[in-house]
Amino acid sequence: MINKLLFLTKNSFMRKVKTKWFIAANIILAFVICAVMNIDSIINLFGGDFNEKTKVYVVDNTNYSFDLLNENLKQVSKTINDSEDSGYELKKSKKTKEELVEKLKDEEIIIIINEDKENTLDVTLVSEGYIDTMDYQVLYGAINSTKTMIAINNSNVDPSILTNIYKEVEIKRELLDETKKTEDENMEMIMTTVFPIIILPFFMLSIILIQLIGAEINDEKSTRGMEIIISNVSAKTHFYSKVIANNLFILLQGLLLILYCVIGFLIRKVVPTPSGGLEAGISEIISSISIVDFVDKLIYIIPIVLLLMALTFIAYSLVAGILASMTTNAEDFNQLQTPIIIISLIGYYLAMMAGVFKGALFIRILSYVPFISAILSPSLLVLGQVGIIDIVISIVIMILSIFVLTKYGLKIYKVGILNYSSKDLWKKMFKAIKE
Image 1: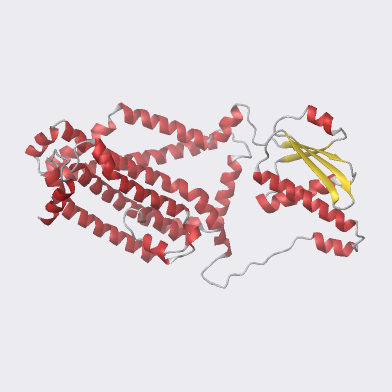
Image 2 (image 1 turned 45 degrees about the horizontal axis):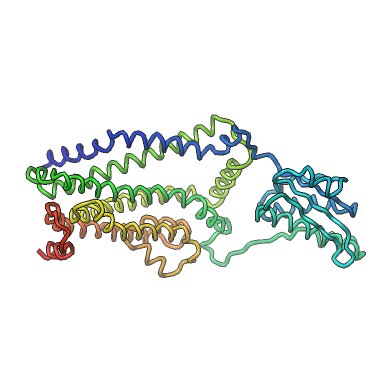
């Protein structure tokens, strides 16, 4: 039995690895991943410049607003973007609006400032097209701060009072819960940026796993090759060979994805990258991760998460094999697999929105549910909404699910593997379970 199992497993695995499509798909994947990870360098190579600032021409008809606006722009940008670099370069211009508009380029902006007796300032913002919402908020905030400062100055307020008004507030953060850290408030940023990227490969690989098993079993049934195989080996051996071979293939594909990411990072180290753009974003994320001691947490999170993911892959392959055995063609299998994909998709979106639920009981209960626990539980663990014990419970439930799927699924598989009729499909499945 062992020899036959190894033979079928090897045959099924090599059939996938040796295909031209597998080689071509991985070449494309490697190229795309490395290109995305170095997109800023590629854009820079073809003439783009992440460091190039948008020019803002300021027509200051008040003769005292420009310097205040320039300073306030840095302050507002620091408040909103955590950086004094707003991405704008202010230039004072003595030209008229008509002269500037005539030579105005895309993404350039004109700010015209006039005195106003009632509102202190009258400001007109001119651009060729739309302005990004975040950038507009920075400009809007800087202009309003400038107007406030001028209004206060015009009110003949005592200089010492003005100093106190303009001085930034120093906020001291205190948390009553001793188990919480103020630094961990940055964790939500990690959850909305880093985590979706990490769990996306697991989600995609689980979908691929379901498709592979269904396609392979349906192919063997449609060509009548299944009858020859089952006449030489037991249905149990055939079932296990499909599960093992396809999980090994997914493991290989996952390792290749990690390899492509490593190559992409090495390319970033070798090739000069622009100081702005993606490089700045990556630096900010890495800085935030180090602040919240995320690296220390990974020491015990990674092994547990990998174990839970491995068990979930096995469960997915068992379900896919059972459903595929009861179908006669790919169309029928696609209909049966839809609920599984929807459940997995729900788990993916719940993981991305985990921070919104703030430790709600129902999200904790959902973290125990098989098939979505591998996606949802890690995100809740990072956020501190569940503990190690909850992850262990999810693993135990997943193991029990695999046991049930193996015990009763094998009965369905034995009946369905040589079934070539779609009539009374569910009746046959329940009858097999009862027997």
